[in-house]
Image (cartoon, rainbow, N blue to C red; front, side, top):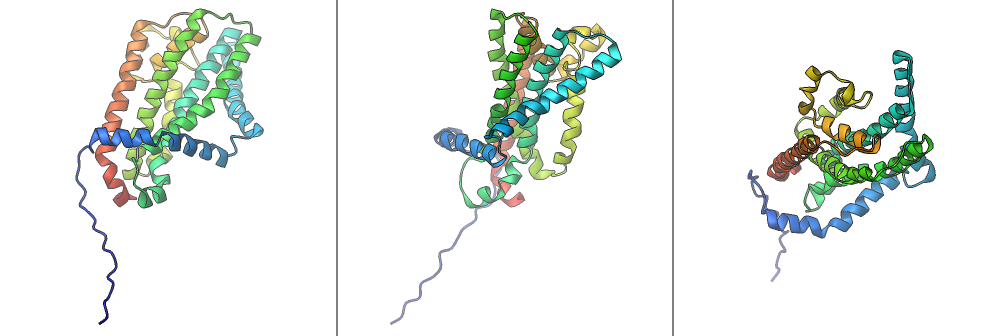
Length: 279
């Protein structure tokens, strides 16, 4: 008597909108924290950022860009000082943290197609890894900035420790933006092509090439509409002028960061189970 062995059957459940069980989801995410760190480092090694010249390029790229912008400011305005260059360098380095998070995050989900289709894991790990990579890239530029301000003779003060909470708020905002844009890119792939124009527009509308104090009161009424304006203004006040950030700037920055993170995370988690179908 012969018996036939049937192949195992795979059952695909229909997609249901809504949030997954959050407690179990966050526990699963936390248990993979080591993998997130190693995955981020592997991405850096793949792009040779773990080498000496790779580290140098991380610094030289924004440093050369700040030099070009400073030269244009000198030519256009006809005046310059060390404080202006320190402001330009410090804010540009922090802006690059957000910009790199967006650039890496936009393809975090679509670029991890094989991983998503073959492995069960919290998909939000992918944009988190993208932001962690951007933080790794930011750290050497911050060290170079401290060297620059020392060489130019800008005094240090205890108020500079305010840069720690400002940096944490910036990372939270970057994480929210990366999570949001990675989810949007699953449905609208052309957003990756539009992103360079978006980041450039935000750069020009943010106090990087100029200080916020140089703007007229009429224009400053609209600063609340830019999520980076208050962050960069506070960053410059702390690291360039040695002043405590304005309470209003901190509250606006925190409100933007929490709002973008919470709304982006809800959007991502409610759509996560559809990614395999869309990819």
